[in-house]
Amino acid sequence: MDSASIKKNVIDFIEGHADEIIATGDQIASHPELGFQEYKTSELVKERFGQLGLSYQEDLAVTGIKANLTGGAGNKCRVAYMAELDALTCPAHPKADPATGAAHACGHHVQTAVMLAVAQAMVETKAVQYLGGDIAFISVPAEELGQFEFRQSLRKKGIISFLTGKQEMLAKGALDDIDMAMMMHMQMPKVEGKVITIGGSMNGAIAKNIFYKGVTAHAGSGPHLGVNALNAAMIGLQAIHAQRETFKEEDCVRVHPMITKGGTLVNSVPDDVRLELFVRAKNVDALTSACEKVDRAFKAGADAIGATVTIENIPGYMPRKSDENLDSVFEANAADILGKNLVAEGPHLNGSTDMGDLSQVMPTIHPWIHVVKGKLHAEDFEIENPYLAYVQSAKIAACTLVDLLVNGAQKALEIKAKSNPPMTKEQWLAKWEELVGK
Ligand SMILES: [Zn+2]
Ligand SMILES: [Zn+2]
Image 1 (cartoon, rainbow, N blue to C red):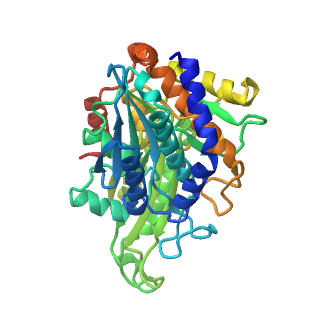
Image 2 (image 1 turned 120 degrees about the vertical axis):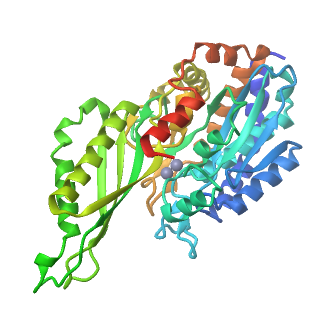
């Protein structure tokens, strides 16, 4: 069967199951779960993979799942199609879990429903028998960065070594057999008149916990006996601000701190002051350089006052880059299904994702589907156009996979050969160690 006929079958199948796909998304949104705790969502995914007769590995990076669809016409390469499992804390969202405050305010529920639809279409239309490579359908936990205390506790227990799911899967070898990875993410309508943006890039990020230690004393009668840790922190923050003019525009550096503890009692010299911050940048060199400046600034604050400072570095995300050749396969299918005028090149975004880490070591694609009414991560987040979010996007993803893997996986192999990822997995691990320590 030629690829046009295979794609037509897949498109018709997805169209015919539109209501079920949307219902699956609604079902997932009804039990939002935070990162590394997505147990119910994980069960739902496993049940669906089981119904499709797919073998899968479970408990990857705590709650992750990887199902394998074996190409019926060869196994020359393996493409990962990924969907994120987690919700995020957004207690004001109308569908938030009252116990945890978790809500699907980033659209990951849609990703999972779409991934399951694509898997079902590949199996039930028998498209898989024409594929010259495998598809790994992967549910990844914990894309959102947060709940540091909980995740650091998992890290200290040796359960995870990174704080997000794709990084953890990569570090633990669960992606060693993957040649390239694709996923889609929901987005607000930022580009006028366009519903899909493809390509673009995103910032990398490092999180830091800062602990200033001083000496407490009576704030009225004995401040000369104390060491004021809050003053040390204020000087540290000023020293960061004094360096902002050195950040180059094209590096898109962001440094955003927050004081989480400013002292213990107003009548005592503050001796225990804590801050959290993120450093973000568009490339690894700028991220490294901005981190050095931030660390220097905090140390200068401590030195000036005679306090001490401890800086705890937490791995955030690597910057995300796109693979142009992989992008163009997706773009052609998006144009076929939606019309060329609705598809655009994506911009650089200063936000971050763990797909960035994968993009450093393999070809990846992370297009945005502009279907969100309200704001990402906010209580007014809502999918405005479910047909586009679930049904049209599933058709585009499925047709992209067909194009990559028909004819002996010719297209996928060509993309792999042309790709030039900046790092190997070993170099990626070494870079994180250099940036944040072990
Ligand atoms: Zn998010
Ligand atoms: Zn997200």
